[in-house]
Image (cartoon, rainbow, N blue to C red; front, side):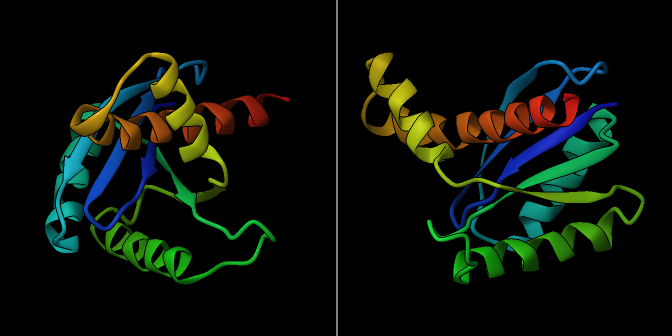
Length: 138
């Protein structure tokens, strides 16, 4: 089944997708959109183009496991997606540490500046989705 991984952000949202066998997550890219309605529309188009059957959204939690305002914004955004795609289930996945891991990959690859900002959200989405796939394989 094709699954879309989302690292939702106020300005940039990273997207990744897995193969039919749910083995490997691959970066699709980053959507630069602050308007939530337009962002939801763009993700709806991606889901149709990629034949997505499930969405996994990174849920930003505090280090103690509680949810703050960012988690609330993510949950509200997921409601827009559910309105547009009621047949596609959305699961949340704890995204603590994914941006840090993505930043480490970027540093190791010597990626800096604007290029890093443009890639880090998509890489975070890939990490979220790959971790999700691996945990569900067990």
